[in-house]
Length: 103
Ligand code: SF4
Ligand code: SF4
Image 1 (cartoon, rainbow, N blue to C red):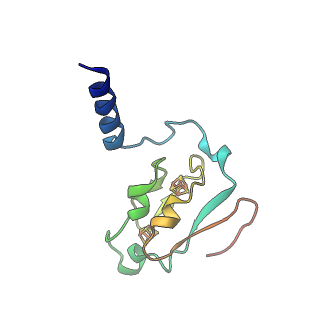
Image 2: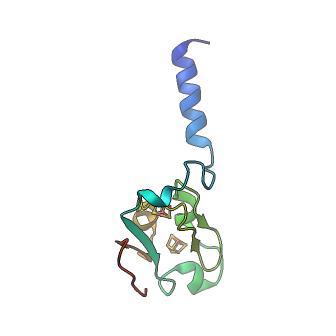
Image 3: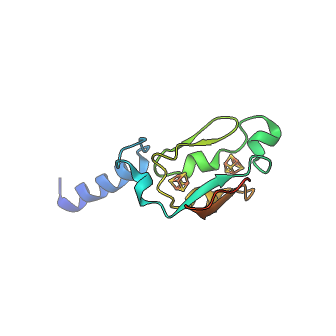
């Protein structure tokens, strides 16, 4: 197989693989901001069924659990903010790592 074809195959494979929790180590150390879920605004809790879970689907570290309510494993969350960006109900807020807030 030509090098270019191998490169394309690797790219397609990487794009379709599901991430695994802890794959990149203890990524919580990278975080400067942490995602905090406002469960009252989360549609999964409001409807009490699996109607969204976009945050679970987009998290690149697989640290969001597809549960009701949604849970985040802060040992491996790297604070990238993708979950907050993708949440269609603005139910996730990125806050300073040092700040504790009640959603
Ligand atoms: S993306 Fe937002 S609304 Fe959807 S399950 Fe996650 S927190 Fe809830
Ligand atoms: S900020 Fe959200 S998307 Fe990023 S690693 Fe943490 S839980 Fe996953």
